[in-house]
Length: 79
Image: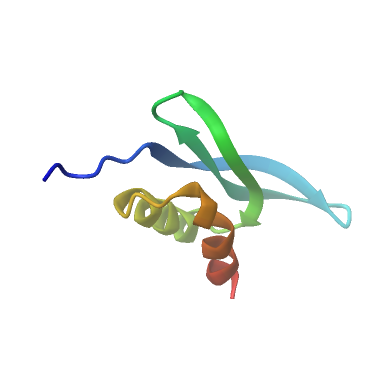
């Protein structure tokens, strides 16, 4: 049996955001199809902790998470 391949690459998205007049650096997730080489989903400003989000992104890549599950994963991450 062949090993499943990951058709999606999860990466960290970093940008500056303003909330209630205060600027902050926020981190999100961008998902790219490795087959079509195009962005299939993007969730911005999930957290201000790059370290914690890097751990989540690595797990998504390691488990070859299908992008249809990313919103549930992010919701659980924020709880």
